Image 1: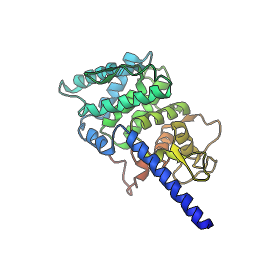
Image 2: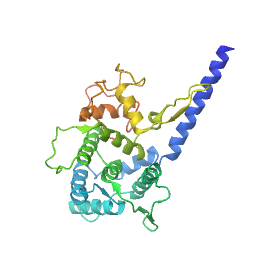
Image 3: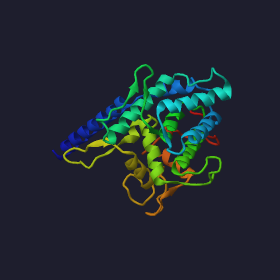
Image 4: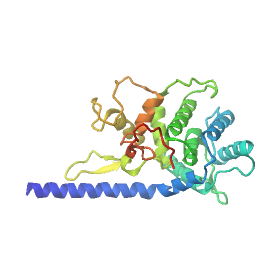
Length: 284
């Protein structure tokens, strides 16, 4: 009877977890194939292009570090056309619009601004609310044609710029960012469909009579990745070694390692088995 009860509990727990996974996939603004299509359609949208956009948006909106999506896209297109002509644009841009709109809806819902609503221009479908530049730039990386490591580097630079008031050209290339910014970036990646569903599913506090699961917050995912699944100080294979309670700054290599853990797994990197002697492969 005890064995039967355990099997029943395990079965119900698995069903609960599968239901949460279905919820994550349903709530996602893009599916993996659409993300592949977006990247494949933008082969000329390279790291150099995004770096120029990064510099210009902070030059224009650096005082508040936020802009409306319309304002942001206006700068993006201006830079792209300056670099490669009027024909250069974000292909399949409607997919980008969908991601940003969905992220905005989550952002304002979580901040208790439901009654305020989100104002959209019906013809263009653009969100007309001020949004952190870091979130808009993170969404833009969905179209980036680059290696995984370069993608991580630009995300780290985005965090550094959002975390201080220094001019982007004079910021310390060996600087570090705060845990607060790392958690915010994980939240941005989660909102912009760049984390795999399984990594976002964690155990809730309910374990009896049936183990229940939930969608983890960015903060919960970060601490699981940093400390190990049990939250203890013992490092496990594939996790970032735990340092101490005062560890408040994160270097770029640590950030890269965090993204590759199974608790965050950005772009499915935790599933990638590195070929012997091979360097980072381009995400496609």
